[in-house]
Amino acid sequence: MERNTFILPDQDQAKRRTRTRPESVYDLFTLTENARGIGSGKYYYLRTYGCQANVRDGETISGMLEMMGFQKSEKPEEADVLVFNTCAVRRAAEERVLGEIGSLKGLKRKHPEKVICICGCMAQEEAVVDEILKGYPQVDIIFGTHNIYHFPELLTGRLSDGERRVEVFSEEGKVIENLPVQRSQTCKGFVNIMYGCNKFCTYCIVPYTRGKERSRRKEDIIAEIRELKAKNFKEVILLGQNVNAYGKDLGEEDGFTELLKASAETGIDRIRFYTSHPRDYSPTTIDAMKEYPNIMPSLHLPVQSGSDEVLRRMARGYTADSYKKLYDEMKSKIPGITFSTDIIVGFPGETDEQFRKTLDLADYCKFDLAYTFVYSPRSGTPAAKMPDDTPAEVKKERLQILNEKIGRYANANNQQYMGKVLQVLCEGSSKKKADVYSGYSAENKLVNFTGPAGLKDQIVNVEITGIHSYSLDGKVVL
Ligand code: SAH
Ligand code: SF4
Ligand code: F3S
Image (cartoon, rainbow, N blue to C red):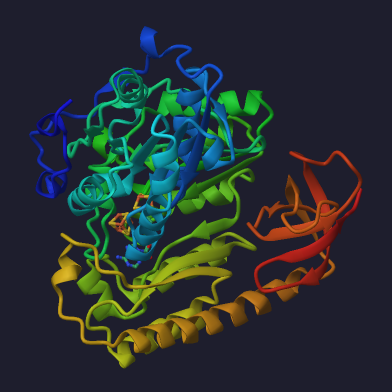
């Protein structure tokens, strides 16, 4: 394959959202005959960065590789195929990936037969692919987020002729069902409900890297949930960049709530969903959360900023007051609900006064958890062209001030759980100590606890005996 047969990303095309494009088309995955068994006796290494959508894509990539006969390895130097499933949301994440791939130069020189692959959101970026093609000859395959299902063919081709392959589509294609999946956990499973994003928040690269919103069919989603339940999974996490818009592309007005109810009616123990957008949040969703005890009382609702002026420039489509109203409504209707959020500091032109509005909002909402970021310019997005004269040190300082405030509320919120019994889905031993379990409570609190052997994958009652800002300690009560 020559360079001119590469299919390279094109950001202008990725931006387009025309009505003339065909509606979602569904198709089934099949593994080509020549890919079967090609990995027999060989190993793969997979490194996934970024959000849960990427984690779920990684599980599909593992599923396909294992269908081809490859076995998983945790060591890059031992693997025959190395896959880097990347995130493009901030430059720091990209630099980490590029650094890691850069460090594989020596390994590739010693073992030219190893195949190094890059996929995920970075592969969708014109400038990044250009950078890789020019500066990283050790990379053999680049494929994008829209053609993951094509990876087995690209890999088989590379293994047979040794040629580099680049295949990145800038226009989303079919919604592929039936993809194999190698799940990373045995008690909670990610279920994609929709792909892409149409929101185009001015700072964000995701609509360009993930394409337009496309919903999976409700029956396919419910079938996946039922399958997980049959396999004894206790929790499903419904995934989409903007789950509240689920079904809009299928012409459904209140598609997400309907889907949420149908998911709850499968009888699976726990349902969560990520990510919600305040602008699309439907009152019927709040009612469903109240009505079904298996929809968990915790919500991740990114606010991004507490300043109306900054929110306007971010094109978020709501004000601090309307966010607070939604927050109040949920707090009053759903007892014990916990809140987490995402906040960006140092958006172009953010003044001290505007930053203070974010602090005010944090004082009002007293979040249980917040993922906080310093704004990172993404090439091709509108915000990257906005004047930005705030020095980097000031932005860093704002982040520190905010984090300190968030941490204080998180800790204060957790005090109420002391001595209480929470229901925790036990995921296994905690990372730090083998004789301590860890898992999440219904409120989405991380709990480290002691108890008898054999609790993995079960929902257990845990009495809380210790409080930290971002975790709780406890012991099982029978
Ligand atoms: N679809 C989700 C998640 C998007 S990415 C949502 O809408 O909430 C996750 C978070 O990364 C965002 O909520 C935002 O806070 C942050 N983020 C996105 N682009 C960013 C950028 N250019 N710089 C800094 N943070 C960013
Ligand atoms: Fe990005 Fe906004 Fe879409 Fe979230 S809703 S993925 S922040 S454009
Ligand atoms: Fe990153 Fe892509 Fe997710 S940019 S946050 S991996 S959608």
